[in-house]
Image (cartoon, rainbow, N blue to C red; front, side, top):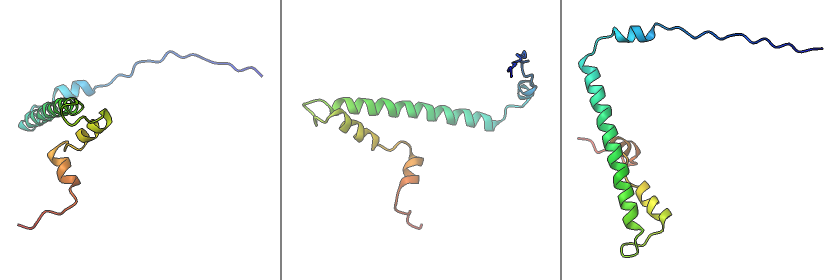
Length: 96
């Protein structure tokens, strides 16, 4: 019993999606979306920079002298975003 294999040339998939996306209008919603995502991206980079600066200082002998894993644990305890902090809080907010 012989196994035969055939090799077929695969054709590229043609799509009209890029052309249809180019015809969509740019609305104020899109501007707010891009500004919001850009702001989140900048704040995320700032958080990473701050956490790495703090971790470097906490491991020095003349400060707290923590080990690297301990310093990284302290940086993990920093709130990542106001939304995450709000979602992870265990106490319900008081009524107005």
